Amino acid sequence: MSKPTEPDDLYVLHQDDFEPQRPEWSHKQFRRMVWRTRWKFFLNAGGTLLVVVILYHVYVSALHIYFDQSKVRNEFMRSIVSVVEMNGDGLRVDKSNRGPFEVTPFLTQKANLKVYRQVGSWEVITGEVQAELSITGKFSYKITKTGAYLNGNDTGPFYLPYALVDGKPEQEGSEQNSSLKRLRQIDDGHVAEMSMSLKNLKSPEQLMQILSKYDVGVTAMPIYSGELQEKNLSYSRAGMFDYNTPHLSLKPLYEMGEDGSRWFIYFPAEPEDQKQAQPEGSMKEQVEFMMSDLEWMSGNLNYSGQEFDQRRLAYLKENGVQVYGAVVTGPVRELQKIAQNPEFHHVHLNRVEIWNWD
Image 1 (cartoon, rainbow, N blue to C red):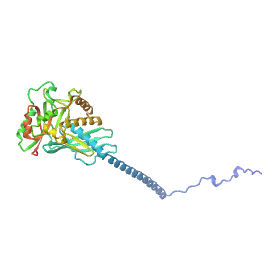
Image 2: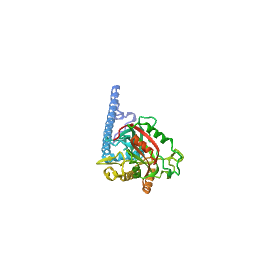
Image 3: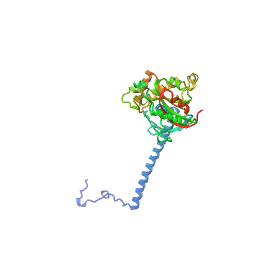
Image 4: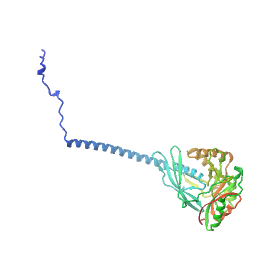
């Protein structure tokens, strides 16, 4: 039996036909809800930040553990010493630093090291080198001078031998006369550093034979690596036929290994000593190490002048190592004798200190 149809005007509204009426929130309840939401957000953000900080410290600690390994440290130290000293004309990097190097989160190693010059028996600090080595092998450095003088005591330039520039000046420049005059005015109780150029190219052994007659130490020698053959290579001209160009420096042997390191203040002094001084490094060993060091740094580092050094290396392999000057240190009377030797020209007196010579 079917249910009778109710008229429209008699349709009864049910409770389900109405939306439930929500209770009104008080101002106090609303503020409580806002603060609860804020605290929840801050707690979540703080927790996330804490996790990030912990992960960052773990990451940095892992970096330092890796980069403080002797092999990695030594490679960075070798990069600094090789590039700075081979371009420094007797400038030395302090190798006694045993503290950790700085490592950035982007895997760049940084170091600030003292640089000094050997004046007599003293290591005279002249500045600081700031060096960086990225994970890609890009090496850069900057030397900040901290010397006691504002207007001098820089190492004098080295001039190429006359035979390389097809000529000879009529007379020596005033630079050598000025250095000789200063040497004469200094009493015997002083030592100094002096740089001078050779009039003719010589092998390192030949130059050491000349200097072995004097009581001095030799700390660097400028190497001729075919620079005059380079195009677009900057040079300066001091006189009619006097040129100085950027060059590499032969420096006393320096080695660093996992078991320790060794380096030397001066080159072997006399030919007789070189045969007996194998533990101290003969001149042949010094040259061989310089060649291997140049090959290593020009092949493994990306630095300003890398392409020039690669061409210099090729020239030296083909033509051998020849030098055209030296940086020496010792008593001023001995330096005065060297300055009067006809083998040399363009003598430049550098830093002077009170007596400290053995």
